[in-house]
Image 1 (cartoon, rainbow, N blue to C red):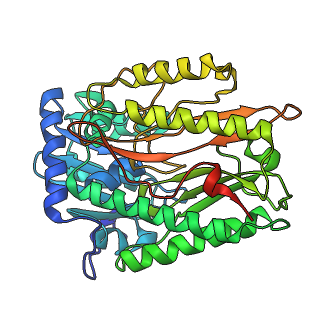
Image 2 (tube, one colour; image 1 turned 180 degrees about the horizontal axis):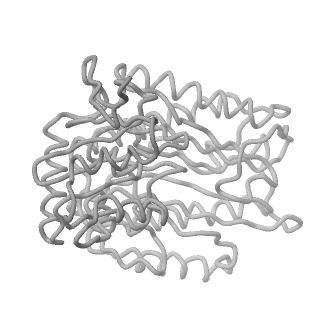
Length: 400
């Protein structure tokens, strides 16, 4: 039996998160950037760029995936284990590579690019091993890192993306209310987290009946577990007076949104209340700074000054916010749009960014724990639109 190196397996109806016109517009923007860089073909390997330009969000399980974009073609490259699903979920063509011999993945890519072309690749994602394979199989005349240009394109959201992100923020609020209802002394973090996750997944299925459902999650932390923003859920049982951290993360077709709130179980002591109120004040001040013309570093320095005046800056743990779009806790990041001292990107209408100041007071000190509020804001022509609805602060979030 003759076994092919790659083939096309297209079956079923195509279902995409956005219209064909939306993807064509994104590809037109990419091709303009390719022309500026002198790139003839792009070989994308990351989940975020493949999803952004094609709609397909892969599950690698040790296998490489790709998207090849030329002046006229857009072709996803997928493994045989997925059969026709990648084609049903992508815009453009799809080629399936086989496992019969090593590096059929690159032979499939070669069938689209040919040899000797100027190739764009993702320098922040492609491994050294795969870069070696690209050079061996495609023999590029030049290889250029296209990742920074694609990141800049992804920072500016289309109207269709803004609709998706608004829906995601609404779903995050649904999870927040479900968590608030589930909080009680003696409950485990995992039980509360599951209540929030289940509520969000049901809401996503109601709003997007044709989507694929995966990756939605909750981090619900209590007591000492609140000290880090990304601490995983445990089976710790809540106690009266515990500081709590609510974090909901709905994922819709690769698009991430979030809601994060400080809470307390039944009671909040005076020392904790003082820290909490200071962080809420910084949150409100920070949101007022997010408008066109402000740079990320400028906003960061102003919030730093706010905390320094209150002798709290030493308790800040990370930057004050980041961009939203095609990203997750294990793929994607528009690192050029983060509220940090070393980022000078200027905010522009159509960008989406969070405000999320966090203070961590070490265990053993009055008010110990991690305090964080998080809202998502769309930069408008004259300011911002806050699309997060769940309330923040002590009045609503002393619960259980």
